[in-house]
Image 1 (cartoon, rainbow, N blue to C red):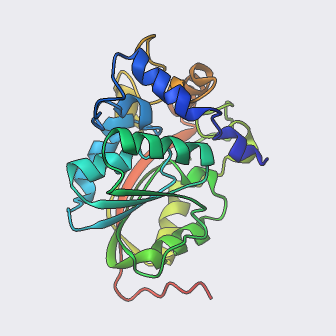
Image 2: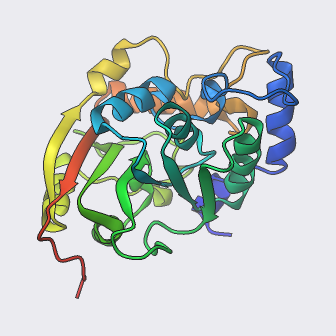
Length: 277
């Protein structure tokens, strides 16, 4: 099995999620809210707070059709579906995460608004112009071929559609500490600089509506999604192995400037040609 797929594997994930939910004093037999599960299913930098801020920036409407790329356990998809009322399609590389997402969709009663598919962000199983919004959080740093990634995003977006994302970019140093929440070994990680990201997005037909480096803001907050939860509380440690070491390495990498945390909202220009040939 490729290393990246191993990194995002979680054996017996449904049993682990149910055990974690019960240990936190929640009853999986009663309908749960996305907010109750926020510490468990928001596997990206900044956790639920970062998702809420990106949602506000993207101005998603109930009539929008949204694609969540690299959706993980679909925590953000449930947040969007419950808060805004939109329909969300999810693409996820990990079959374990797909199974966990399907379980949590049922527990929150949102399975009729969210569709989860196993697949690759580089080969999306959708027709051209299928979505109003493409949403992606902390995924691109695992993808080397970012040009194909952005071309696929542009292809499935309607003209004038939005790409809303948060990402890790390279900082001032090539030194990195592993394992990280997003990579066990260096071969799993494919960071780009801010200039490279902006240039590629421009080449693929995107215009900037919002782009900001929020590294200092994130560091000023006391906790983030990768900080291990205390015993008896929901947290990513329910299904992410070796979380204390991974989270410590991520925080050290950000504090020392080895990585930068950025987010943006970009609009697909109406006259863009998405055929990569």
